[in-house]
Image 1 (cartoon, each protein chain N blue to C red):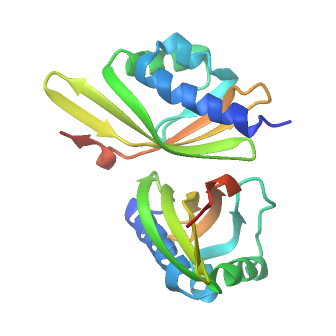
Image 2 (image 1 turned 120 degrees about the vertical axis):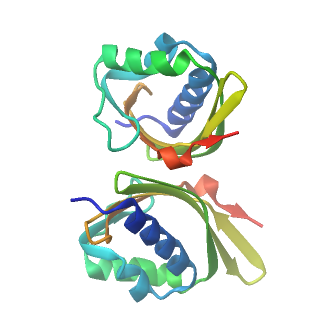
Amino acid sequence: MAASDEQVRAGIEAYVRLVGEGTAEEVVALFADGATVEDPVGADALSTREQLQEFYGGVCSMDRRTSMVEAKVVAGQAAFLFELVTTVGDATYTVRPIDVMTFDDDGRITSMRAFWGTDDMVAG
Amino acid sequence: MAASDEQVRAGIEAYVRLVGEGTAEEVVALFADGATVEDPVGADALSTREQLQEFYGGVCSMDRRTSMVEAKVVAGQAAFLFELVTTVGDATYTVRPIDVMTFDDDGRITSMRAFWGTDDMVAG
């Protein structure tokens, strides 16, 4: 049983919104137990609750905002381009990853792989 | 050994260009032997030369054009958003898939997965 496309769409929209304005706890609650996070692609995959909490704790400690740019949902899976803008003092840094996600039949994320390179980060 | 990011970038740019203006033979030549094509995600994966030739033969028989919208290359892998516009008589149909690709160390595609749904196709 796969998640429905409606569940997946709700899941990725919640993810982008919470990565932009939520707490690490709220983001991590979107993931199933044992879910893997490979961010960026090529990095060792994180898989424990503690690892996810630490990773999103770092993200959520920043002054930041996010927006969904373009999302594709098919067969209970998703790939989506989104934008993350972080502010440090007077500087802003923009990165637009493409995330690929799978879901369980409760609509929780079972894997996330983030495609972006340091070349993709734009300072402005 | 993975492909270099430069090889991968050249590979995906050639792919988008040839899907838009090349022959099926030229597109299929970008793939390694035994490469898999899952288009859209959720469909049975194609894996033989004959299957790829038939699939891209269908694409390349259409009046069409393509453009790369936004590409992410990391760790010898890629995810990219591109646009395919097909023309049938007076009608045009636009679809913007997100393709995810892996490569061998010769820069040939070893797998392709295309994220798009029929909901994503826009007639105009």
